[in-house]
Image (tube, rainbow, N blue to C red):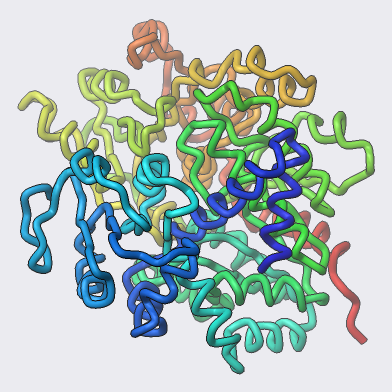
Length: 562
Protein backbone atom coordinates (compact mmCIF):
# COMPACT_ATOMS: atom_id res chain seq x y z
CA UNK A 1 0.00 0.00 0.00
CA UNK A 2 2.75 2.45 0.98
CA UNK A 3 4.59 1.65 -2.24
CA UNK A 4 1.48 2.46 -4.29
CA UNK A 5 1.05 5.85 -2.59
CA UNK A 6 4.76 6.51 -3.04
CA UNK A 7 4.41 5.71 -6.72
CA UNK A 8 1.59 8.26 -7.04
CA UNK A 9 3.71 10.81 -5.15
CA UNK A 10 6.67 10.25 -7.49
CA UNK A 11 4.46 10.75 -10.53
CA UNK A 12 3.11 14.03 -9.18
CA UNK A 13 6.59 15.28 -8.27
CA UNK A 14 7.76 14.49 -11.81
CA UNK A 15 5.15 16.98 -13.07
CA UNK A 16 6.60 19.76 -10.95
CA UNK A 17 4.39 19.47 -7.86
CA UNK A 18 6.40 20.01 -4.67
CA UNK A 19 7.01 16.99 -2.43
CA UNK A 20 4.83 18.13 0.49
CA UNK A 21 1.87 18.93 -1.71
CA UNK A 22 2.45 15.77 -3.78
CA UNK A 23 2.15 13.57 -0.68
CA UNK A 24 -1.09 15.25 0.38
CA UNK A 25 -2.53 15.22 -3.15
CA UNK A 26 -1.54 11.58 -3.69
CA UNK A 27 -3.53 10.49 -0.66
CA UNK A 28 -6.47 12.58 -1.81
CA UNK A 29 -6.22 11.22 -5.37
CA UNK A 30 -6.35 7.59 -4.29
CA UNK A 31 -9.06 8.28 -1.71
CA UNK A 32 -11.18 10.24 -4.20
CA UNK A 33 -10.91 7.62 -6.93
CA UNK A 34 -11.47 4.68 -4.59
CA UNK A 35 -14.51 6.40 -3.06
CA UNK A 36 -16.27 6.10 -6.43
CA UNK A 37 -15.84 2.30 -6.34
CA UNK A 38 -18.18 1.96 -3.35
CA UNK A 39 -21.83 0.98 -3.24
CA UNK A 40 -24.34 0.19 -0.49
CA UNK A 41 -23.21 -3.42 -0.29
CA UNK A 42 -19.53 -2.59 0.16
CA UNK A 43 -20.39 0.10 2.72
CA UNK A 44 -22.38 -2.42 4.75
CA UNK A 45 -19.51 -4.89 4.61
CA UNK A 46 -17.03 -2.21 5.66
CA UNK A 47 -19.01 -1.04 8.69
CA UNK A 48 -19.67 -4.61 9.77
CA UNK A 49 -15.96 -5.32 9.58
CA UNK A 50 -14.94 -2.24 11.58
CA UNK A 51 -17.76 -2.72 14.10
CA UNK A 52 -17.01 -1.17 17.50
CA UNK A 53 -13.60 0.02 16.28
CA UNK A 54 -15.16 2.80 14.20
CA UNK A 55 -14.01 5.64 16.44
CA UNK A 56 -10.55 4.11 16.74
CA UNK A 57 -10.34 3.81 12.95
CA UNK A 58 -11.43 7.42 12.40
CA UNK A 59 -8.97 8.74 14.97
CA UNK A 60 -6.19 6.71 13.37
CA UNK A 61 -6.93 8.42 10.04
CA UNK A 62 -6.83 12.00 11.36
CA UNK A 63 -4.17 11.33 13.99
CA UNK A 64 -6.02 12.95 16.89
CA UNK A 65 -8.85 12.35 19.32
CA UNK A 66 -12.26 13.15 17.84
CA UNK A 67 -14.75 15.03 19.98
CA UNK A 68 -16.84 16.56 17.20
CA UNK A 69 -17.37 15.13 13.70
CA UNK A 70 -19.12 16.60 10.68
CA UNK A 71 -20.80 14.12 8.34
CA UNK A 72 -21.76 15.50 4.92
CA UNK A 73 -23.60 15.02 2.68
CA UNK A 74 -26.34 12.64 3.88
CA UNK A 75 -27.59 10.51 0.96
CA UNK A 76 -30.33 7.99 1.75
CA UNK A 77 -27.95 5.06 1.42
CA UNK A 78 -25.80 6.42 4.26
CA UNK A 79 -28.63 6.54 6.80
CA UNK A 80 -28.39 2.89 7.95
CA UNK A 81 -24.79 3.51 9.03
CA UNK A 82 -25.30 6.85 10.84
CA UNK A 83 -26.29 5.22 14.17
CA UNK A 84 -22.82 3.66 14.31
CA UNK A 85 -21.21 7.12 14.25
CA UNK A 86 -23.75 8.53 16.69
CA UNK A 87 -23.09 5.68 19.09
CA UNK A 88 -19.29 6.07 19.27
CA UNK A 89 -18.70 9.80 18.67
CA UNK A 90 -19.24 12.34 21.47
CA UNK A 91 -20.77 14.87 19.05
CA UNK A 92 -21.97 14.44 15.47
CA UNK A 93 -23.22 17.17 13.11
CA UNK A 94 -25.17 16.25 9.96
CA UNK A 95 -25.11 18.62 6.98
CA UNK A 96 -26.76 18.47 3.58
CA UNK A 97 -28.09 21.47 1.66
CA UNK A 98 -30.86 19.41 0.09
CA UNK A 99 -32.00 17.92 3.39
CA UNK A 100 -31.48 20.89 5.72
CA UNK A 101 -34.28 21.04 8.28
CA UNK A 102 -34.99 17.30 8.17
CA UNK A 103 -34.82 15.08 11.24
CA UNK A 104 -32.38 12.25 10.45
CA UNK A 105 -31.71 9.52 13.01
CA UNK A 106 -32.94 11.90 15.71
CA UNK A 107 -30.57 14.68 14.62
CA UNK A 108 -31.47 17.99 13.00
CA UNK A 109 -29.76 18.24 9.60
CA UNK A 110 -28.36 21.70 8.81
CA UNK A 111 -26.98 23.39 5.69
CA UNK A 112 -23.32 22.96 4.78
CA UNK A 113 -22.71 26.69 5.15
CA UNK A 114 -24.02 26.67 8.74
CA UNK A 115 -22.07 23.51 9.51
CA UNK A 116 -18.75 24.88 8.25
CA UNK A 117 -19.06 27.88 10.57
CA UNK A 118 -18.00 25.51 13.37
CA UNK A 119 -14.64 23.72 13.84
CA UNK A 120 -14.39 19.90 13.77
CA UNK A 121 -11.82 17.29 14.63
CA UNK A 122 -12.88 15.19 11.63
CA UNK A 123 -14.99 15.45 8.48
CA UNK A 124 -16.58 12.26 7.18
CA UNK A 125 -17.36 12.23 3.45
CA UNK A 126 -20.82 10.70 3.06
CA UNK A 127 -21.09 10.17 -0.70
CA UNK A 128 -19.45 7.91 -3.26
CA UNK A 129 -20.73 9.97 -6.22
CA UNK A 130 -17.59 11.36 -7.87
CA UNK A 131 -18.66 14.93 -8.69
CA UNK A 132 -20.29 15.40 -5.27
CA UNK A 133 -17.34 13.92 -3.40
CA UNK A 134 -14.97 16.34 -5.11
CA UNK A 135 -17.13 19.32 -4.13
CA UNK A 136 -17.17 18.34 -0.46
CA UNK A 137 -13.49 17.48 -0.38
CA UNK A 138 -12.77 21.00 -1.62
CA UNK A 139 -14.65 22.35 1.43
CA UNK A 140 -12.95 20.08 3.99
CA UNK A 141 -9.34 20.26 5.25
CA UNK A 142 -7.49 17.34 3.66
CA UNK A 143 -5.69 16.11 6.83
CA UNK A 144 -9.02 15.87 8.70
CA UNK A 145 -11.09 14.34 5.90
CA UNK A 146 -12.14 10.70 6.23
CA UNK A 147 -13.37 8.77 3.23
CA UNK A 148 -14.36 5.13 3.05
CA UNK A 149 -10.97 4.25 1.55
CA UNK A 150 -9.17 5.47 4.67
CA UNK A 151 -11.44 3.36 6.87
CA UNK A 152 -10.87 0.38 4.61
CA UNK A 153 -7.11 0.84 4.93
CA UNK A 154 -7.37 0.80 8.71
CA UNK A 155 -9.50 -2.34 8.66
CA UNK A 156 -7.10 -4.01 6.23
CA UNK A 157 -4.00 -3.36 8.29
CA UNK A 158 -5.75 -4.21 11.56
CA UNK A 159 -7.20 -7.52 10.40
CA UNK A 160 -4.66 -8.61 7.82
CA UNK A 161 -5.44 -10.07 4.41
CA UNK A 162 -8.14 -12.70 4.23
CA UNK A 163 -6.60 -16.14 3.61
CA UNK A 164 -8.86 -17.00 0.66
CA UNK A 165 -9.11 -13.68 -1.15
CA UNK A 166 -10.74 -13.22 -4.54
CA UNK A 167 -7.36 -12.38 -6.08
CA UNK A 168 -5.89 -15.73 -5.04
CA UNK A 169 -8.74 -17.60 -6.65
CA UNK A 170 -8.60 -15.51 -9.81
CA UNK A 171 -4.82 -15.87 -10.06
CA UNK A 172 -5.11 -19.66 -9.90
CA UNK A 173 -7.58 -19.60 -12.79
CA UNK A 174 -5.36 -17.26 -14.82
CA UNK A 175 -2.31 -19.46 -14.26
CA UNK A 176 -4.17 -22.56 -15.40
CA UNK A 177 -5.55 -20.95 -18.58
CA UNK A 178 -3.58 -21.58 -21.80
CA UNK A 179 -4.12 -18.14 -23.42
CA UNK A 180 -5.09 -15.67 -20.68
CA UNK A 181 -5.52 -11.90 -20.95
CA UNK A 182 -6.76 -9.65 -18.14
CA UNK A 183 -8.82 -6.51 -18.76
CA UNK A 184 -8.78 -4.16 -15.75
CA UNK A 185 -11.49 -1.50 -15.59
CA UNK A 186 -13.71 0.24 -13.07
CA UNK A 187 -16.97 -1.20 -14.39
CA UNK A 188 -18.25 -3.59 -17.01
CA UNK A 189 -18.30 -1.45 -20.15
CA UNK A 190 -21.03 -2.90 -22.36
CA UNK A 191 -19.53 -1.46 -25.55
CA UNK A 192 -16.45 -3.65 -25.01
CA UNK A 193 -18.42 -6.86 -24.51
CA UNK A 194 -18.53 -7.67 -28.26
CA UNK A 195 -14.72 -7.47 -28.28
CA UNK A 196 -14.41 -9.67 -25.19
CA UNK A 197 -16.74 -12.29 -26.65
CA UNK A 198 -14.97 -12.29 -30.00
CA UNK A 199 -11.60 -12.83 -28.30
CA UNK A 200 -13.18 -15.67 -26.35
CA UNK A 201 -14.38 -17.22 -29.62
CA UNK A 202 -10.81 -16.99 -30.95
CA UNK A 203 -9.64 -19.17 -28.06
CA UNK A 204 -8.37 -16.38 -25.81
CA UNK A 205 -9.09 -16.80 -22.07
CA UNK A 206 -10.59 -13.41 -21.19
CA UNK A 207 -10.65 -12.32 -17.54
CA UNK A 208 -12.42 -9.03 -16.85
CA UNK A 209 -11.55 -7.43 -13.50
CA UNK A 210 -13.98 -4.73 -12.42
CA UNK A 211 -13.91 -2.46 -9.38
CA UNK A 212 -17.59 -1.50 -9.22
CA UNK A 213 -20.76 -3.50 -8.69
CA UNK A 214 -21.87 -5.89 -11.40
CA UNK A 215 -25.52 -5.83 -10.31
CA UNK A 216 -26.86 -3.43 -12.92
CA UNK A 217 -24.83 -4.81 -15.80
CA UNK A 218 -25.52 -8.40 -14.87
CA UNK A 219 -29.27 -7.81 -14.73
CA UNK A 220 -29.26 -5.99 -18.04
CA UNK A 221 -27.19 -8.65 -19.78
CA UNK A 222 -28.95 -11.82 -18.66
CA UNK A 223 -30.31 -12.49 -22.15
CA UNK A 224 -26.84 -12.34 -23.66
CA UNK A 225 -25.52 -14.90 -21.14
CA UNK A 226 -22.39 -12.75 -21.05
CA UNK A 227 -21.48 -13.54 -17.47
CA UNK A 228 -21.35 -17.24 -18.28
CA UNK A 229 -19.10 -16.78 -21.29
CA UNK A 230 -16.63 -14.38 -19.68
CA UNK A 231 -14.71 -14.64 -16.42
CA UNK A 232 -15.79 -11.42 -14.69
CA UNK A 233 -14.62 -10.73 -11.15
CA UNK A 234 -14.98 -7.73 -8.86
CA UNK A 235 -11.90 -7.03 -6.73
CA UNK A 236 -11.35 -4.52 -3.96
CA UNK A 237 -8.32 -2.22 -3.88
CA UNK A 238 -5.98 -4.63 -2.10
CA UNK A 239 -7.08 -7.60 -4.16
CA UNK A 240 -6.41 -5.63 -7.33
CA UNK A 241 -2.88 -4.75 -6.21
CA UNK A 242 -2.28 -8.33 -5.10
CA UNK A 243 -3.32 -9.65 -8.52
CA UNK A 244 -1.16 -7.14 -10.39
CA UNK A 245 1.86 -7.95 -8.23
CA UNK A 246 1.64 -11.75 -8.49
CA UNK A 247 0.33 -12.26 -12.01
CA UNK A 248 3.18 -12.90 -14.45
CA UNK A 249 1.45 -15.11 -17.01
CA UNK A 250 -1.24 -12.87 -18.50
CA UNK A 251 -0.89 -9.44 -20.14
CA UNK A 252 -3.01 -6.81 -18.38
CA UNK A 253 -5.04 -4.30 -20.42
CA UNK A 254 -5.68 -1.24 -18.22
CA UNK A 255 -8.76 0.74 -19.22
CA UNK A 256 -7.51 3.83 -17.39
CA UNK A 257 -10.18 6.32 -18.41
CA UNK A 258 -12.91 4.43 -16.57
CA UNK A 259 -11.22 4.80 -13.18
CA UNK A 260 -12.26 8.42 -12.70
CA UNK A 261 -14.35 10.94 -14.66
CA UNK A 262 -12.55 14.15 -15.56
CA UNK A 263 -15.86 16.01 -16.06
CA UNK A 264 -14.16 18.08 -18.77
CA UNK A 265 -11.75 19.59 -16.19
CA UNK A 266 -8.03 19.15 -16.86
CA UNK A 267 -7.22 19.41 -13.15
CA UNK A 268 -9.13 16.18 -12.55
CA UNK A 269 -6.93 14.37 -15.06
CA UNK A 270 -3.93 15.03 -12.81
CA UNK A 271 -5.39 12.56 -10.29
CA UNK A 272 -6.42 10.15 -13.03
CA UNK A 273 -3.04 10.03 -14.76
CA UNK A 274 -1.07 9.73 -11.51
CA UNK A 275 -3.30 6.94 -10.18
CA UNK A 276 -3.26 5.07 -13.50
CA UNK A 277 0.52 5.34 -13.84
CA UNK A 278 0.87 3.86 -10.37
CA UNK A 279 -1.42 0.98 -11.47
CA UNK A 280 0.89 0.36 -14.43
CA UNK A 281 3.95 0.50 -12.17
CA UNK A 282 2.35 -2.10 -9.90
CA UNK A 283 1.75 -4.47 -12.83
CA UNK A 284 4.47 -7.12 -13.07
CA UNK A 285 3.34 -8.72 -16.35
CA UNK A 286 3.13 -7.01 -19.74
CA UNK A 287 0.94 -3.93 -19.37
CA UNK A 288 -1.17 -2.51 -22.16
CA UNK A 289 -2.68 0.95 -21.71
CA UNK A 290 -6.19 1.09 -23.10
CA UNK A 291 -7.32 4.47 -24.44
CA UNK A 292 -10.81 5.44 -25.58
CA UNK A 293 -9.56 8.53 -27.45
CA UNK A 294 -6.01 9.63 -28.15
CA UNK A 295 -6.22 11.86 -25.07
CA UNK A 296 -8.65 12.90 -22.36
CA UNK A 297 -10.18 16.01 -23.89
CA UNK A 298 -11.26 18.79 -21.52
CA UNK A 299 -12.74 22.25 -21.99
CA UNK A 300 -11.63 24.06 -18.82
CA UNK A 301 -8.91 24.03 -16.15
CA UNK A 302 -6.29 24.89 -18.77
CA UNK A 303 -3.90 26.33 -16.18
CA UNK A 304 -3.11 22.65 -15.54
CA UNK A 305 -2.70 21.78 -19.22
CA UNK A 306 1.08 21.43 -19.30
CA UNK A 307 1.27 19.38 -16.08
CA UNK A 308 -1.48 17.12 -17.40
CA UNK A 309 0.29 16.74 -20.74
CA UNK A 310 3.50 15.78 -18.96
CA UNK A 311 1.73 13.20 -16.76
CA UNK A 312 -0.15 11.77 -19.74
CA UNK A 313 3.12 11.32 -21.62
CA UNK A 314 4.65 9.59 -18.58
CA UNK A 315 1.67 7.23 -18.39
CA UNK A 316 2.11 6.32 -22.06
CA UNK A 317 5.83 5.70 -21.58
CA UNK A 318 5.20 3.49 -18.53
CA UNK A 319 3.01 1.11 -20.54
CA UNK A 320 4.54 -1.66 -22.65
CA UNK A 321 1.96 -1.11 -25.39
CA UNK A 322 -1.01 1.10 -26.27
CA UNK A 323 -4.44 0.02 -27.49
CA UNK A 324 -6.52 2.92 -28.82
CA UNK A 325 -10.26 2.91 -29.61
CA UNK A 326 -9.86 5.68 -32.18
CA UNK A 327 -7.63 6.62 -35.09
CA UNK A 328 -4.18 7.87 -34.01
CA UNK A 329 -2.86 9.53 -37.20
CA UNK A 330 0.64 8.57 -36.04
CA UNK A 331 0.66 10.92 -33.05
CA UNK A 332 2.16 8.39 -30.63
CA UNK A 333 4.69 7.12 -33.16
CA UNK A 334 5.89 10.67 -33.67
CA UNK A 335 6.48 11.41 -29.97
CA UNK A 336 7.31 7.97 -28.58
CA UNK A 337 10.52 6.70 -30.20
CA UNK A 338 10.98 3.43 -28.32
CA UNK A 339 9.17 1.28 -30.84
CA UNK A 340 6.25 0.72 -28.49
CA UNK A 341 3.53 -1.49 -30.07
CA UNK A 342 0.47 0.66 -30.78
CA UNK A 343 -2.82 -0.58 -32.21
CA UNK A 344 -5.80 1.47 -33.30
CA UNK A 345 -8.82 -0.78 -32.83
CA UNK A 346 -12.38 0.55 -32.69
CA UNK A 347 -15.22 -0.74 -30.50
CA UNK A 348 -16.74 -2.75 -33.29
CA UNK A 349 -20.31 -4.01 -33.10
CA UNK A 350 -21.53 -7.63 -32.87
CA UNK A 351 -22.79 -9.44 -35.96
CA UNK A 352 -26.57 -9.86 -36.01
CA UNK A 353 -29.38 -10.56 -38.45
CA UNK A 354 -31.35 -7.51 -39.54
CA UNK A 355 -35.00 -6.95 -38.72
CA UNK A 356 -37.55 -6.06 -41.44
CA UNK A 357 -37.98 -2.33 -41.95
CA UNK A 358 -40.44 -0.70 -39.56
CA UNK A 359 -43.92 -0.74 -41.06
CA UNK A 360 -44.82 2.89 -40.27
CA UNK A 361 -44.87 5.47 -43.03
CA UNK A 362 -42.16 8.09 -43.08
CA UNK A 363 -38.40 7.94 -42.46
CA UNK A 364 -37.08 6.61 -39.15
CA UNK A 365 -33.83 7.75 -37.54
CA UNK A 366 -32.08 6.01 -34.63
CA UNK A 367 -30.34 8.04 -31.89
CA UNK A 368 -28.19 6.11 -29.40
CA UNK A 369 -25.83 7.34 -26.61
CA UNK A 370 -27.48 10.75 -26.13
CA UNK A 371 -27.78 13.94 -28.17
CA UNK A 372 -29.76 16.13 -25.79
CA UNK A 373 -26.90 17.26 -23.55
CA UNK A 374 -26.76 14.16 -21.35
CA UNK A 375 -23.73 13.63 -19.11
CA UNK A 376 -22.90 17.36 -19.37
CA UNK A 377 -21.49 16.63 -22.84
CA UNK A 378 -21.42 20.01 -24.53
CA UNK A 379 -20.63 18.45 -27.91
CA UNK A 380 -23.99 16.64 -27.81
CA UNK A 381 -26.27 19.47 -26.69
CA UNK A 382 -28.08 19.30 -30.04
CA UNK A 383 -31.72 19.74 -29.02
CA UNK A 384 -32.41 22.10 -31.91
CA UNK A 385 -31.06 19.61 -34.44
CA UNK A 386 -33.29 16.82 -33.11
CA UNK A 387 -36.25 19.22 -33.22
CA UNK A 388 -35.43 20.09 -36.82
CA UNK A 389 -35.48 16.39 -37.74
CA UNK A 390 -38.99 16.14 -36.27
CA UNK A 391 -40.13 19.27 -38.09
CA UNK A 392 -38.93 17.80 -41.37
CA UNK A 393 -41.16 14.77 -40.81
CA UNK A 394 -38.57 12.25 -39.58
CA UNK A 395 -39.49 9.81 -36.84
CA UNK A 396 -36.74 9.94 -34.20
CA UNK A 397 -36.15 6.80 -32.10
CA UNK A 398 -34.25 7.95 -29.03
CA UNK A 399 -32.74 5.32 -26.72
CA UNK A 400 -32.28 6.88 -23.28
CA UNK A 401 -33.86 7.09 -19.84
CA UNK A 402 -32.31 10.47 -19.00
CA UNK A 403 -34.25 13.40 -17.59
CA UNK A 404 -33.02 15.43 -20.57
CA UNK A 405 -34.84 13.11 -22.98
CA UNK A 406 -38.00 12.98 -20.88
CA UNK A 407 -38.12 16.77 -20.51
CA UNK A 408 -37.51 17.20 -24.26
CA UNK A 409 -40.38 14.84 -25.04
CA UNK A 410 -42.77 16.58 -22.64
CA UNK A 411 -41.88 19.96 -24.09
CA UNK A 412 -42.60 19.07 -27.71
CA UNK A 413 -45.51 20.61 -29.54
CA UNK A 414 -48.46 18.27 -30.01
CA UNK A 415 -47.69 17.92 -33.75
CA UNK A 416 -44.33 16.32 -32.97
CA UNK A 417 -45.17 14.22 -29.91
CA UNK A 418 -45.99 11.11 -31.93
CA UNK A 419 -42.79 11.35 -33.99
CA UNK A 420 -40.38 11.33 -31.04
CA UNK A 421 -40.22 7.74 -29.82
CA UNK A 422 -38.51 7.46 -26.44
CA UNK A 423 -37.17 3.94 -25.85
CA UNK A 424 -35.45 2.41 -22.83
CA UNK A 425 -31.70 1.97 -23.40
CA UNK A 426 -30.64 -1.55 -24.43
CA UNK A 427 -27.50 -2.85 -22.69
CA UNK A 428 -27.34 -6.08 -24.69
CA UNK A 429 -25.28 -4.81 -27.59
CA UNK A 430 -26.39 -7.49 -30.07
CA UNK A 431 -30.02 -6.76 -29.22
CA UNK A 432 -29.38 -3.03 -29.67
CA UNK A 433 -27.87 -3.44 -33.15
CA UNK A 434 -30.71 -5.76 -34.15
CA UNK A 435 -33.31 -3.29 -32.82
CA UNK A 436 -32.02 -0.28 -34.77
CA UNK A 437 -31.60 -2.30 -37.99
CA UNK A 438 -35.33 -1.78 -38.68
CA UNK A 439 -34.85 1.97 -39.16
CA UNK A 440 -33.59 4.02 -42.11
CA UNK A 441 -30.61 5.99 -40.78
CA UNK A 442 -28.60 6.85 -37.67
CA UNK A 443 -27.87 10.26 -36.17
CA UNK A 444 -24.37 11.32 -35.15
CA UNK A 445 -24.55 15.07 -35.49
CA UNK A 446 -22.26 16.52 -32.82
CA UNK A 447 -20.82 19.97 -32.25
CA UNK A 448 -17.04 19.61 -32.43
CA UNK A 449 -16.32 23.32 -31.95
CA UNK A 450 -15.92 23.11 -28.14
CA UNK A 451 -13.06 20.61 -28.63
CA UNK A 452 -11.49 22.35 -31.61
CA UNK A 453 -8.55 24.77 -31.33
CA UNK A 454 -7.57 23.65 -27.83
CA UNK A 455 -3.91 23.27 -28.86
CA UNK A 456 -3.36 26.93 -27.99
CA UNK A 457 -3.54 26.01 -24.30
CA UNK A 458 -0.56 23.63 -24.43
CA UNK A 459 3.12 24.56 -24.49
CA UNK A 460 4.58 21.20 -25.48
CA UNK A 461 4.49 19.99 -29.08
CA UNK A 462 3.07 16.69 -27.80
CA UNK A 463 0.14 18.41 -26.11
CA UNK A 464 -0.49 20.63 -29.11
CA UNK A 465 -0.50 17.68 -31.48
CA UNK A 466 -2.91 15.64 -29.35
CA UNK A 467 -5.34 18.54 -29.06
CA UNK A 468 -5.23 19.36 -32.76
CA UNK A 469 -5.76 15.76 -33.89
CA UNK A 470 -8.53 14.88 -31.44
CA UNK A 471 -11.52 16.37 -33.36
CA UNK A 472 -10.69 14.39 -36.52
CA UNK A 473 -9.64 11.15 -34.77
CA UNK A 474 -12.38 10.36 -32.28
CA UNK A 475 -14.98 7.79 -33.30
CA UNK A 476 -18.18 7.36 -31.28
CA UNK A 477 -19.27 3.75 -30.84
CA UNK A 478 -22.72 4.74 -32.11
CA UNK A 479 -21.29 5.13 -35.63
CA UNK A 480 -20.12 1.51 -35.63
CA UNK A 481 -23.48 0.27 -34.40
CA UNK A 482 -25.35 2.20 -37.09
CA UNK A 483 -23.08 0.74 -39.74
CA UNK A 484 -23.36 -2.82 -38.38
CA UNK A 485 -27.15 -2.43 -38.44
CA UNK A 486 -26.93 -1.50 -42.13
CA UNK A 487 -27.91 2.14 -41.59
CA UNK A 488 -26.34 5.14 -43.30
CA UNK A 489 -25.61 7.88 -40.78
CA UNK A 490 -25.92 11.64 -40.56
CA UNK A 491 -22.44 12.58 -39.36
CA UNK A 492 -20.83 15.94 -38.65
CA UNK A 493 -18.54 17.09 -41.45
CA UNK A 494 -14.82 16.63 -40.85
CA UNK A 495 -15.16 13.82 -38.30
CA UNK A 496 -13.65 10.36 -38.55
CA UNK A 497 -16.89 8.30 -38.83
CA UNK A 498 -17.54 9.79 -42.28
CA UNK A 499 -14.40 8.01 -43.48
CA UNK A 500 -15.80 4.69 -42.27
CA UNK A 501 -19.10 5.11 -44.08
CA UNK A 502 -17.52 6.41 -47.25
CA UNK A 503 -18.94 8.90 -49.71
CA UNK A 504 -22.22 7.06 -50.28
CA UNK A 505 -23.06 5.72 -46.79
CA UNK A 506 -22.18 8.84 -44.82
CA UNK A 507 -24.60 11.76 -44.83
CA UNK A 508 -22.60 14.88 -43.83
CA UNK A 509 -24.24 17.58 -41.73
CA UNK A 510 -23.09 20.83 -40.16
CA UNK A 511 -24.45 22.39 -37.00
CA UNK A 512 -25.06 26.06 -36.27
CA UNK A 513 -23.71 27.78 -33.18
CA UNK A 514 -26.96 27.09 -31.34
CA UNK A 515 -26.93 23.36 -32.15
CA UNK A 516 -29.32 23.34 -35.11
CA UNK A 517 -28.75 21.75 -38.53
CA UNK A 518 -27.18 24.27 -40.88
CA UNK A 519 -28.32 24.82 -44.49
CA UNK A 520 -31.10 22.29 -44.17
CA UNK A 521 -32.37 22.52 -47.74
CA UNK A 522 -28.88 21.85 -49.10
CA UNK A 523 -28.39 19.09 -46.54
CA UNK A 524 -31.61 17.16 -47.03
CA UNK A 525 -32.57 18.13 -50.60
CA UNK A 526 -30.19 15.80 -52.50
CA UNK A 527 -30.37 12.91 -50.01
CA UNK A 528 -31.66 9.53 -51.10
CA UNK A 529 -31.58 7.58 -47.83
CA UNK A 530 -32.64 4.31 -49.42
CA UNK A 531 -29.79 4.55 -51.95
CA UNK A 532 -27.36 5.39 -49.14
CA UNK A 533 -28.60 2.40 -47.17
CA UNK A 534 -27.79 0.08 -50.07
CA UNK A 535 -24.20 1.36 -50.05
CA UNK A 536 -23.48 0.55 -46.39
CA UNK A 537 -21.13 -2.42 -46.01
CA UNK A 538 -22.20 -3.89 -42.69
CA UNK A 539 -19.17 -6.16 -42.30
CA UNK A 540 -16.85 -3.15 -42.15
CA UNK A 541 -18.35 -2.26 -38.76
CA UNK A 542 -18.56 -5.78 -37.24
CA UNK A 543 -16.16 -7.22 -34.69
CA UNK A 544 -15.93 -10.58 -36.51
CA UNK A 545 -14.26 -8.84 -39.45
CA UNK A 546 -11.48 -7.32 -37.34
CA UNK A 547 -10.91 -9.53 -34.30
CA UNK A 548 -8.09 -11.53 -35.90
CA UNK A 549 -5.95 -8.38 -35.95
CA UNK A 550 -6.47 -7.72 -32.24
CA UNK A 551 -5.94 -11.36 -31.30
CA UNK A 552 -2.61 -11.51 -33.18
CA UNK A 553 -1.52 -8.23 -31.59
CA UNK A 554 -2.25 -9.46 -28.05
CA UNK A 555 -0.39 -12.70 -28.77
CA UNK A 556 2.97 -10.88 -28.76
CA UNK A 557 2.51 -10.14 -25.03
CA UNK A 558 1.46 -13.65 -24.02
CA UNK A 559 3.74 -15.93 -22.05
CA UNK A 560 4.30 -19.21 -23.87
CA UNK A 561 3.26 -22.11 -21.65
CA UNK A 562 4.76 -25.58 -21.99
